[in-house]
Length: 626
Ligand code: K7E
Ligand code: CUA
Image 1 (spheres, rainbow, N blue to C red):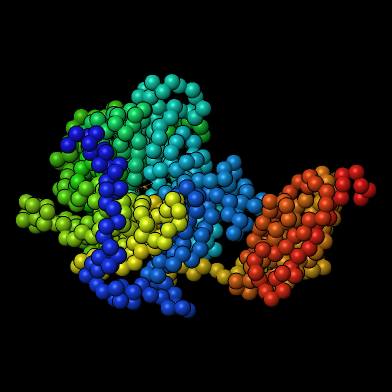
Image 2 (tube, rainbow, N blue to C red; image 1 turned 90 degrees about the vertical axis):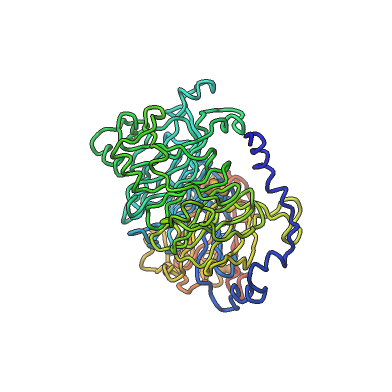
């Protein structure tokens, strides 16, 4: 098929599939509606079995839902201010956000130890501003944002966590001239622009992130990746598109060549090369040139315009899908190692060896049209999302019988329609050595009226599929705000989040626990410091006096040690709201610019006398005597 026709199909495939299938039909994949309802029903007072951590796309947030109920339980603000929790309003979280008020979250990744989720952290990337964030699973709060990552533009191909959380691996979707800030004509793209693969180092104790090393690449566009384990331990894999190195009319120009490249990166070799001084410093980061340091990077040609590449739980089978070819290609990593050993190359791409395709491929599984991502159930099956088909295909991983090898159609076990235009899908623990299996969540780009009408801006849809049996069963659907790309599923009992911040662990020097220590102090000519206590159902002090021109700093401590006893603190007409969890101290700072009397009040309905939880900020004119 001519590529332009195929591209049109790609663009409009989802729109052709009108919501003709009726509800009953969708719900009837092998089970009755009643059975499905029972399977997902979590009665009032009962709890879900799994967490679902959804990326929130350009909302800049992570959404937390429960499985099997699919109920949205909470939102973790990461890259965007969120007045609901006061995120981005106090000094600490303002500093986290830095110069940005939004981000584009694509791929959350849970920390791992020995290839299993260890329940410590959840990482996620910001595609727009080249950042990575770390969320603690002890309090579900964003602790750190690293970035913009130097020499890196378009942090889409992340956050992929190595099996002991040594690194978060990151690859660039866009290429730019380096160092950043250098002006070059776009026509010089092929020569002057570079992509980058980065290893973000994670401190094993504190979780603190830093840029460990980078590998400079030609200006191709990296897409999704994953990390190795077992035989592929120490390796990472990305697909890329734009082997043409085009920089305009991308839709056409980046789809000319018949094949694109997957990149196989030996990150342990990269780490070693840096230790041996084989990297050059650029913007404070050791950058490896893979032409000068052989062994860190190999390419292999794959079906054009690929999107996802996923490593199965054994670490041996590497599964890549090209959007414009109706197959998922399975590479055998043992053959990859043999091919590298034997230098079984098919030439090179800009000085880096290209592995011989036939030497490392195990087979091309005919999964369906528009394959994107593959997940695994740990029972020898892969599940591939099909964007154009709007479906999920279940297929059998190798080793295959001779009969199956002769006709790989025989490895395709089941196919289920989803609604509509699926992007990612997630199976619990798919990226670990021992997946949970059981549930699959399909994250669909279009919902097309499968919900009560909410106007032209329609939500995304997520569908819960039971994969415990031979055939997949569609059991539930729900809707989310923009925009889930990927998600992670974690067993609820894998973590033990805290319920209050213990008083003895509060190290904030400005925390006050005794009402006698609370109060207003003029610390300088225009510096007013307040130590404030929030407790049911009052603020101490409930009067703050200052004058125009002062900088007002308020340290608010919620002295409650009772679970769920949260207080907020908002000052009228000052664009300020913070929320203090039990035992927490947060600090707000505001330059006072207008005289008057401004009420402050608690924004969380905390008690029967919550409405009474208020006070007054009196701001005198600048020239008034103090
Ligand atoms: Cu992971 Cu949506 Cu960024 Cu695929 S992307 S669909
Ligand atoms: Cu405290 Cu309402």
